[in-house]
Image (cartoon, rainbow, N blue to C red):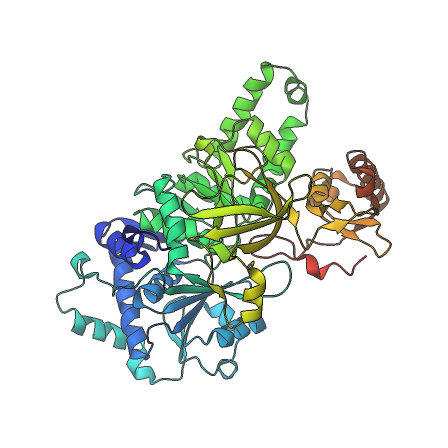
Length: 558
């Protein structure tokens, strides 16, 4: 079933460009580059001329790779409104992975940042007709006549086509149904196996519909876009949903450290914030934990009524740190530490957790903060858009989460077997996550099917829940719980070395503290979940762009 005509993806952006012509659309944060909707529309029209000059046809593939910037946005919208298929490539992918994606997708054009191009040779991507810089639009490499498609040639063709200029009334894109393919997103999951998710325009439009109907975006929206646009989460809401409503998105192209982000939040004062748990958890550890662990605050927090005063002040301080004007923060992409979530829930911080996956463009469940979100849950399925059920639940109601609805992918590109395995016989998409639903329809995620471990008597062990407890221990930055061949559990811990150095701890003292932490965590676990050994790891674990640890890299380390 397709969304109603008002949510036709191409027409959404045709209207947005026309109706917001003079309003600011995108800003490259940290530079003086801001494009109005009108300037963005002109760039899109020039790219359409470039596509035609290169012989790009409907449903051809156009790849884009680079950090967030206004040119990236223009390429994405130009591709989809032209009738071609966009292939976003995460800027953190290695060159050989990018080459594989470009070739596997059959992309005819490649728009890429200069730094990402350094590891790629044109001979390695023989089907690509032209490579264009995302930095300044200069042609990096051409299999076509460079005189026909360089910047000056396209500018001349633009003038010939629009001798009286290009204005809001001139914005018109060819009809394109929501059943058409809009993008092929290659996953960057924790299994090490990248697959191309075929997403129809209907799935992209489903997120926009939800954001608009629940007033998450408006013409007054200001978004700080630090999640990579090549990832479905940031793309759907910080970019597509925001611009669909006439909002203004500020694109952060640098690595989003808490220091950089807090500075951006203070300057821009966003109206809504999308984040992955790791960013919020780091800010919580740096700003909140030092306050609540010291007396007299730690004492007051245990006193009824008085604790409300302290909680109110901490909430105000945290809200101000994020710019002071946002309505709510949306957390997704990975599990949020339960202790962090519980404290933020206690102080009534305006935050909600959602659940999604690239295969669903990405949103599946979410309940806005002001509509009654529940502690520990990922919200309800998007009403009228997505359905959720639990497959083969156990006695606790826990089973694999399966979904279906408007946002669901068509399948994996050129992988019929993987596509077949991804769906049940009656058409439900397998998420690979374990979870349960409460009586009100709220979803609770317990862990990944592939990471669930079995105890000595067949008990289910969810390592993510144990890791959340370990990560709350002193001097712990992050951890992985793994299982040895003898079934004993090992905690692989990366210490917070900055904190260790600042405290002047020796290696022997650090080992003693980690052993104490192991015992403390075990006191909170069932017998079959006990950690037998702690091993220290010298640096942060390698992660996907949404900051989930790539577990497959570490399974053989115990």
